[in-house]
Image (cartoon, rainbow over all chains, first blue to last red):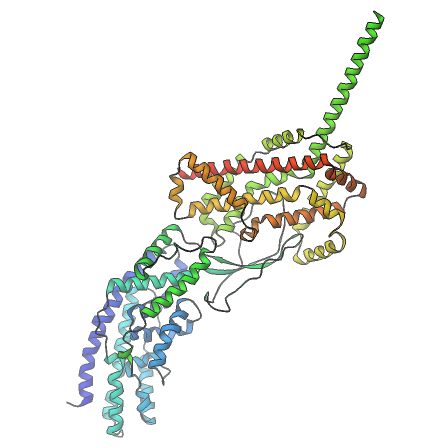
Length: 345
Length: 289
């Protein structure tokens, strides 16, 4: 049988493995992590709405699969300013991308075609680019954290990648102007692309879900710091006036990681004869004891050490942020795509 | 007979004169004590304390003070009952009576002290409308005209800055109280017996009072409160006529005046600490239910 015919026949089986293995296991674990995480944070509706990208990220590192990294990347990298996204992109995705993508700007397409563009001649390159663009343009842009939507989106990604790969090899097959040498070089690369190499390892659903969930919580902690602008406040020693605890505060979410040299370091407030001068202060979202205990157990289970327990009381949240960042590095390191070889093209 | 009568009358006169002298001395002392209480703003400092509960809630959870609404309102209600102005005043008066007053005209001292008190209130009201620029300008003026002057020295000898430092310590204690109930180990508190709780509270008060300055929240930093009160006192003194300033100077630098001031501050501290202890014990008991 011709190499291209064999490829087309095999591709169907490979996609079945992606669907039946990674996709389902991932969807199950994701579903579990999602439900658990959102149940813990049920009061925090706003936060949940912003979680879509983070879920993709968690999935990417926890499954250790390049596919999800690639799938997630397009939007993730745009958001990679801080938090878990930055940690993972610096430690995980970037290395993966650097290792895998050298040519194309279309990262999702690399899942299907690998480094084909390296070996194709200019006219073929144009054709391939057009094919990938028209295939991936169909990729849903719906953003939702819902596990079902997410699974469908993942499946769609595999279908479109498979479609794209088929289109390319058939067009190569049907193009008489492509030399045998170029055709073979293209097929070498196509056969090394991730879609043609589904991971053989079984993903442990339970452990996967826990890693995903811990990633989500660590990211949540990294997002719990705010910079508050406190205006000048005159001193008053005797007026028993009450303070409006619901007054509007001037808060900005901090966009830097604790280790970043640009992390805010507010100057001490100036103390005048008549009051405390305008100043900035870093404040943290507090976690209730219930949520703290939950994170504590999860962290102990996944990483092997408690999270909050040994933090100094006075600077608890400040230290928690530093620790969350280091846990994310650890998770990223532990979960750096093990199947990177499989993804090599 | 006549002689006896004269002797009796003379004795009676002496007794009356003595009685008048004693009662004058007593009322003189009394007037000085009242003027001192007024000038040192003891009631104002003390009355303010229960309202710290809302500031403490905000300082504890700046993003979501509502999350500690129960703790805050419980503390405030208890503090309003425990910090009893009438009882506190009786305590202060008792402590001051035990110290003899210096030889000073009570009326003059009373006038000067009241005038100082009025200037302090006026300053407090002025400050409320201040911007940071106004405050900077005031700092400059202070540096130029008051710093290191006898007025600043007198302000340091007066008791206000110590009372203010004590006052805000209760705010810190309120933050700890809220925190203790929000922490994961609050179960331990709920299970404590009365004796253990007493020891725990004493320890907590000691730690709160001795907290290093840079660890104290800005809202309740004793060092800052003392600074504001010292400089405001000096500013208020600068607005008084020189003769009133010298009356105050005479009182506060006399050994008797110093003793009175010390007795006042000590009694205030003892009262605030005792009330804080009671407030905590009621608070822990009420949240234990």
